Length: 81
Image 1 (spheres, rainbow, N blue to C red):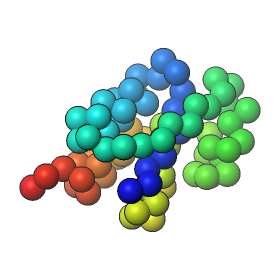
Image 2 (cartoon, rainbow, N blue to C red):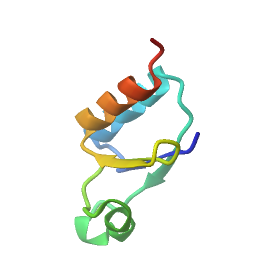
Image 3 (tube, rainbow, N blue to C red):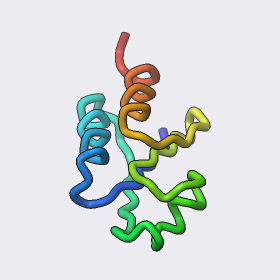
Image 4 (spheres, rainbow, N blue to C red):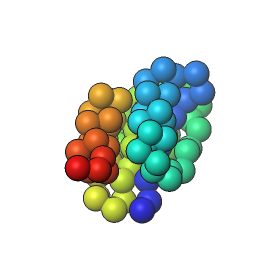
């Protein structure tokens, strides 16, 4: 499983996603981004925008932003039924 989370230190939305990933015992890579939006070129390249969090789920071919949507995706895709 290859999940990458683009995140910003101290971002509560990012931490909500990290908490859910931890709750579901999902391994993931973190990529820490710059605090300045104008410096977030890698996030823009990956997702088309500069906001975080951004989750890249290679196994499912999904790249998404917005913490609520990401948590919903994780629950739908990885939570035990």
